[in-house]
Image 1 (cartoon, protein in one colour):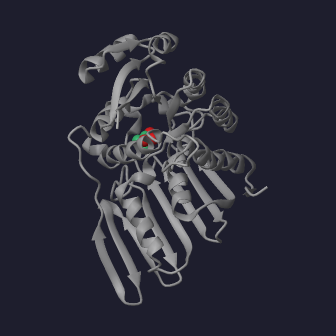
Image 2: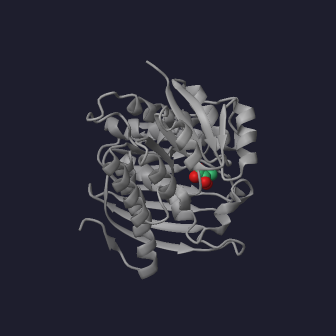
Image 3: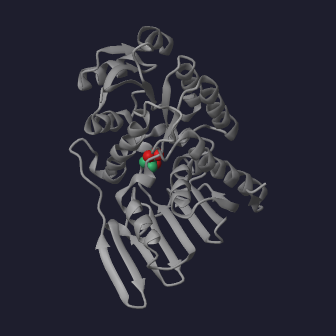
Length: 348
Ligand code: 89V
């Protein structure tokens, strides 16, 4: 199968890992880079041997849209609609970094623009692709713990995330967009769709603009009750960054994904313990190894869909634009609930 040609839009922190992850997956050719600051793009071009560099998206597309198959947008959330529109208008398929958009309205516009242009929109949402989360889903679907009725999905950390991503400290809406877009997607991946949501938020860190704590209670359509907690203000005995810890109780047992990728399954027969660590890649940052390894799995899934010649077929992609719209809908419903201090019904 011929390699698909793509351009990377945005050469910031995550491009350091998205690009090598594409090279690990293979089957793609990186033709061009865009960054608003050309010097940053030049540095990436030298590092990754990319032939064409631009600080104008229009110039990049004027020169290369005819040969490109897709673009990989790895920019700040406020520019996702802009770059999605630019690519879709040239008939290019789009992979866009999470969170999908800075509002539900802009996320919906991204969907509509790509649908109108007949191009495919995918969201690079990789937490559901983490090895431990796939293992939790396998145990859950085996039926060994019976019908799940209660769960907790937890991302609580004191990791200095603003050191690598200073723009996060400027977001008026921080942890629900940055982490909620991840772990609410894990919740949907494990338990399906939600019918109601209640959320409380707080800002503990005085040096940031947005909330750094959010506690969310979901009632899923299955009847399961799920507590989804996220914090970058949690000073705990064991720093778990960037792990998402999960506990699920069912009618025949329970499972716990705890620190250091330990997965315990308990039934009347007792408790079995396994470890489900991520793959390691030489290009990954050890502090982010779990996240960086999931970039490869996510890119592999999206590439398999992009390679489908028959565009009318429903491909294997899990985090399509329309699927991830349901995740971002939970993010902004959580803000709505916190603002009103009310339960928000999602099934209208
Ligand atoms: O992957 C991300 O969205 C990052 C992190 C999880 C590190 O906060 O912003």
